[in-house]
Length: 291
Image (tube, rainbow, N blue to C red):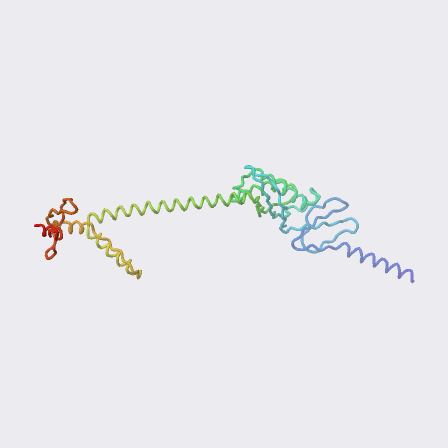
C-alpha cells in the first residue's frame, strides 16, 4: 500500500508540474509565436491563457509596443566639408511577430546597426545648412533608409528624429561672425530706407512751405515752444534773413567825412558829433605864440 501511495503521489506531482509548465499567460501588449518540435505553428497567439503540449511546444513572446532606441552620436563630414557630430532617435515596433523571430536573430540590434549606418550616410549627402534648418526632410529620408530593410524583418519604423548637431568651436565662431555681419547689413539697409523716406517727406514739406510762407513761421513758433518746454536757460531764436534785409534798407547812410592832418598824413575822418571838440582843429600853443 505504501508503494501504491508513493506512486500515486509521484504521478500527481508529475501531472501538476506538467500542467503548470504547459500554461502560459500572454499580456495585452504581447503576441506569442508557438514552436512545436522546432517548427512554427500557424496562427499567432493573442493575449490570455495559452495551453502548451509539454516537452513538444515552446512559446516565444514578442512585444508589440513602440520601442524607443537612441542612436549613438556619429562623426561625419558633410557634403560641404564640415566635420559634425550627429545623434538621433528611432521609434519602431514589430508588425509581424513570426518574421521578427524567424528571419532575424535580434531585431533590436539589427535596427540599431542600420540606424547608425543610415545616419552616417545621410550626413555625407547633406549640407550643413540642411542639417541645421531642414531637418524635417532629412528625418523623412533617414526613415525611408531604415524602413526598407526593416520591413523584411517584420519591423515597422514609426519615425526618426535627428536630436542634436554638434559643430566644431571654430565653425561656431565663424557662424557667429556671419550672423553678426548679416544683422549689421540689415540694420544699415533699414537705416538707409528710413533716411530715404525722411528725405522724400522733407522735400515735400519744403515745397509746401515755399508755396505757403506762413507755414514756415508756424513751424518756427512750434520749434520755439518745443525748445522752451525743455526748461533750458538758453534759447536760440533764428532770425529771418528778410528782416535783416529790411533793416539794412531802412538804415540811413553815414555822414560826410572831413579831411584831417595827423602826424603829417592827410586823411578823411568822420565829422565830430555836436558838442565834441575836434582836437585836430585846435592850433598848438607854440604856433600861436610865434604869430
